[in-house]
Image 1 (tube, rainbow, N blue to C red):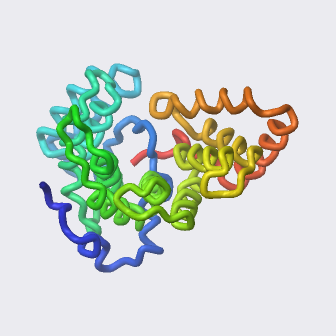
Image 2: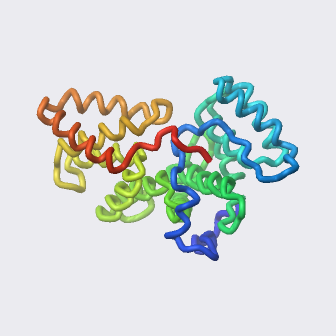
Image 3: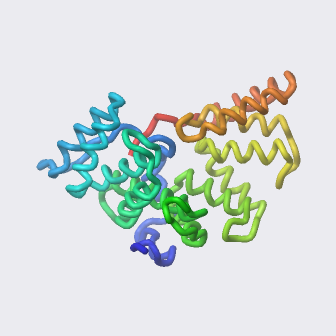
Length: 284
């Protein structure tokens, strides 16, 4: 399929431990990508530099169609960060009709360039994120995009990305253990991985923890705690990426009593003070 179809061990850094790799990805931007940045240390700009700068300007102004054109030109000239943004734009339907097959192909191209010993930290960040995006497609497959499910390969990719502290990878591992996707269900592992992602304020992880506590699935039922997690998820989420979180939050708030709402709000404030939301605060 592509270069990533090898053992997990071969993908891990040869000169760095997992514990000190997290500096690369302290604030992964795992929802909607920020406007592209030039960020090249070269004194002689590469051929794609002007196109990516034009794409950044168009993207920031909301002209996604124009941004898409410039990003495609930059990607054609070898800019992998532009290629990564194209994956997001085709996945989200920004400036173009959503197309999972194209998004997957762009993410594969970036993921295949993953080099744990590479000197370009910005590029390392996007290749790690691309590993997760490829894993998301492989975890369940996508029939319309003709992407076959390969949960074992998805699990391997998530394990690599989780070494760098990527919250979407940690969430995905928790989800796989929770639902038994390609692996045996394991409550302790599910909660462990979901909590790691929740501490980074990754909204889907917070929402899944909310469901678990609200329903008493895998954990002792605690509706106040479940509602707390949904309050936090709503703070962390982006409507473009996770509209279901906002709908579910409204539904649970409608079912909770005034006392439960107040208790949940208080708990959420305490958690948010310890773990502030990183939404829109970071970019590759």
